[in-house]
Length: 227
Image (cartoon, rainbow, N blue to C red; front, side, top):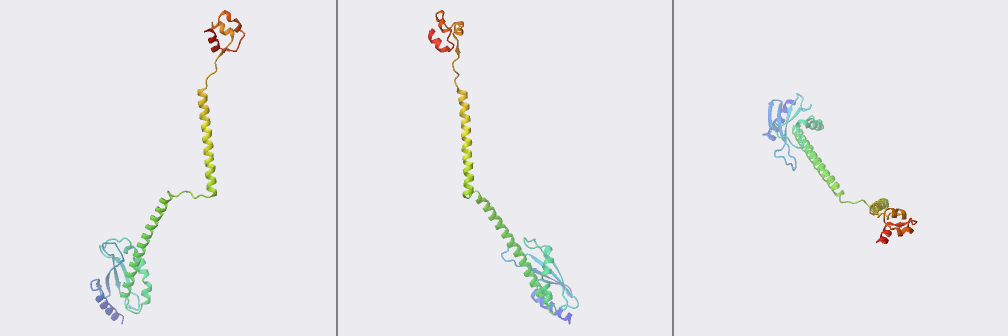
């Protein structure tokens, strides 16, 4: 009974996959599966090879399945059969269990193909979303350059204190600079000589003895008198 169902299923599969199926033995064959990923930009669609081996009691027992990338297939951005095969085969175990007792390979191939395409789409959508979020984050950071600090009581008081402190610092600085300039430009007071000192230096004559007692006559005044 099992062998008859296997032969019958193999004939049906040959009509469905005339160019994709290849016999290995009477109970083993390969099926090439090309993925149709919506809106895919890849130059060549990704593909994989499913190897099917019938146990003696198939379809009452599940077939032996192996999945591999197609020979010389170019790498795809969002699906890697060599790395994803275990995940994909694990994902069709429920389909196999649900179809025990019936010819199931066409259903298995369809489910496997859908799962691989969905995995690629989810990864592509996740990559696009990540790119959009990164672009939005960069835009938010750029916009911060043009945004001021929100004004409220706390920020205003902080600004006012800072402003008043700056004004006070500037005032002190200007006063210190002004004092320094005045110190440099200060004119020294005339040197005052006593009458005796004037006489000794020959700045007055003998008739000016009455000036000897004057200790507070400026030199400039004496010069005026002796001219």
